[in-house]
Amino acid sequence: MEEELQFYRTPGHYTDPKEFRHFLQSLPDNLEEIVRFIKTILIHPLEARNNNFKFNYKKALRSQLDYRSIDRILSEPHVSTLLCKQTLEIQPSPAQRGIFSCDHHAVVFASILRLKGKPVRARCGYATYLIPNMYTPHWVCEVYDEQKGKWKFIDPEQAILNLARESFLPAGKVWLALEKGQIAVEKIVPDYRSGSDGVKYRLLNDFNALMKNELLNYDWILKEATPQPPKLFSKSVANLDEAEHNLLNMLAEISSEEEPSLSIICAKYQTYVHVENLWS
View (spheres, rainbow, N blue to C red):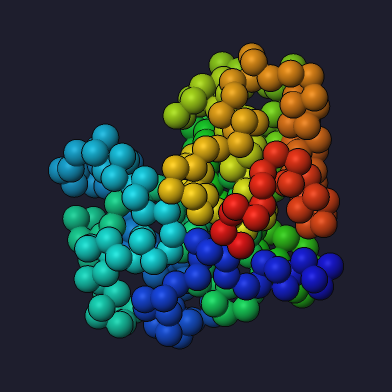
């Protein structure tokens, strides 16, 4: 267990900042203050729109594809301007913050905690608290409570520090529930892909996050100049063969556990990803 916790204490490729590193490390250890700080520099597109901030919603979402790592997020002009103040005593308007989605909030939160040596992992799945009676695509974080000896969900984008485990379902749980007919596909809010294809997408993103490869906005970043995503990632559910479908069921079961085994995750990851081609 200690080896797994140490793995999640240290930054990965996407959560290891070069710029503003010392400032982020100097932030208070209190989780509530860290979340409050993140909300002073970032704002979700829906929140910005609800605050009557005028911007091109679709363009803002598309532009976020370029902000995959913590350094790219912190380099966004609005975010960088706020961070250059090197203080927590800022109260920017919505228009002064960087417009970023829940996945980016999760990466910033995980980056800060890992710089402080605290075990944290980003999770991709579905929230049941954003739209009543619906499963909404969402990213949160899991923080290890060393005193209680267990992981707990925190939603940095919604600023929820004590998120009930039944309120957020890792994508693997939703995949398995769909397989068993326990959830109607109409109850799943469509995202970049709809239905079971959308759930598969998020299942593999969650597995990436458990490997500390927090690939944002459903992208796949390899070292090669012209990367190709793994076939399991790009094939539609309708075109999967039996072995691929069984593998997805296995990945879903592993990632659905409250204490997923890192050694098993690493082993299964190599069944569909050439790990040597990924950032470590």
